[in-house]
Length: 123
Length: 123
Length: 123
Length: 123
Image (cartoon, rainbow over all chains, first blue to last red):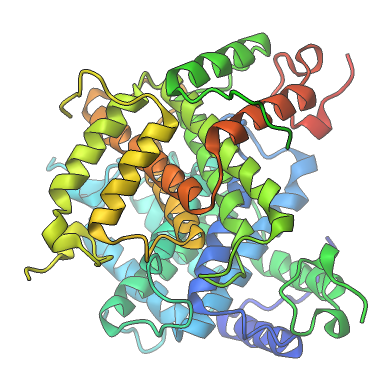
């Protein structure tokens, strides 16, 4: 992929760019939150497929890298479209969820464990 | 959810915050790109489940809203963790994919159509 | 698709046929339960994609039918391979789950409702 | 799970049992093929979640086994409901797909390879 030297790094600016993109194509009619939640699952599975038969700790092969980058971008595009249509402020939702996760997974209990929060044991 | 008045809006700043979060918990050992691609599919399906039996054009019920916001945040968290571990610069990948999509879906052909780019017909 | 006049209708017989297919190709080495659970999600998403932008109550278009049949078959193949490798007797698991669902969704409470069992209200 | 000594092993008989189950609850109104394709992705992801942070070659832990059996059964239930509502004869579709796969993955080319059929190399 060619690379923009100064790509947008702001969630809200990316959403604006996407809204313009979609409006030019009159795609809002298809972009119900429900439909976009379906497309998110489809895109996530396309990324999953890239790792289907590989080993857990295998590095990403060079020949797969650009494809994987595209799948990651597709997931972001769907997620931003979803949030725009569902009236979700994603940066706020992110901040709130990080705070909630910090409470569910306190450092002293969660360190080195992949257990779910309701299975974390006392140390 | 409580709301941070000035939540991070920058992809890179969010990734830094997550990396600190993960390092404090020593979670990098679990966060192979492959494992994170699996968690992305799991989180995307949790969002999908919120819309399972609803109507396409139904508004999001108030009582489901905070749950849906959390699922959207979870997807972003997984995606940012994935990109950090897979050495993908997400803003660059996003910019490149938007450029590619603009070429695949030219406005005059794609307007008002939900067809895939290889099924777009001439007008 | 061409149609076998007497296709196998037995879960166990289908599993035997698949095991022979896989052994001839030496594919058991890839077929860990974990990998097969990934392939199940990938195949399920390919079926989902067939319905991405359609209407809820739209009939299946003729031109999509054979593709959808193949995706349904792919899901069954993955599921049967998964059960073979995970030592799950699928007919027994099915019978047990139907019994459990009958208890979770009693006819008088569940009739006409798409609510989850823990949200079913008294009538 | 309790086990039926003679569980149904026939796809068509299982479908009949499910249709009776659904009709008693008046659930056909929710079971459009599209909705059922969504529930298949949700159920597949619930199975995937069982393997999220485990190792590829790890045996299934005893304490997870009954949960995994239930998820496998849920996938079958959704798939059979889907085929009933989409007018797909699953045994025929399975037989046709096995035949197609045998042609796409000839034994001499596919043996020991996890490559997709269009990437199989000559030997």
